[in-house]
Amino acid sequence: MNLVRIALGITIVFFALRISFYDLRFHRIRNTDLLVFASLSVTLIGIDSVLHKRYFQCQKSLIFGALLFVLSFVVYCCFESSIGAGDIKLLPIVGFDLSYLTESNPWQAIIWILLCGGLQGLLGFCRDRTFSQRIAFAPAIFLGSISYFAAGVWSHLTQ
Image 1 (cartoon, helix red, strand yellow):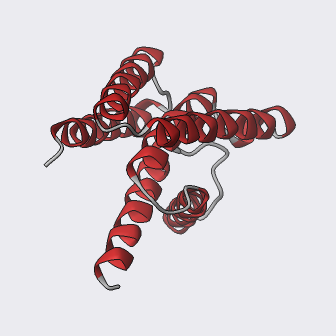
Image 2 (cartoon, rainbow, N blue to C red):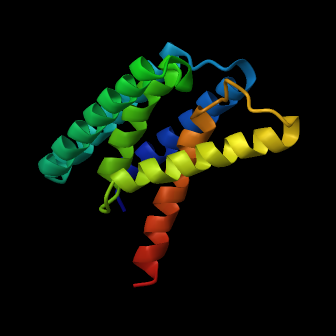
């Protein structure tokens, strides 16, 4: 049993709930939450990669997180109202964690996140009968990540 990975999982769940509820209520993601979440994630993944000699996995995860930041920033610059600044900062942190924790292709997580975001927008449309300009995207990010992780575990168990 890897205690560092368990601690990382608890950290992800704690911040998923904290950030999602705040985003649902105020349509904002606090920088302090992101900074603490990123610091804990980097520290725990750094400890795990040193203890278990997973240097390449850590490097691959850092590159994936950086690519997610660049891609989300490009989307933000091209379509200003499509994604918030907090979501741009949250995506690389979640991508870094997911890429390190899973063995499968982390790009699939983006598909799950977009599906959950689309479902969230569709549910909002059914409720209000109009498309809202702003949705709280942090819950979709975390639900998509959980769906991706669960699908990977399920496919691993059924093999």
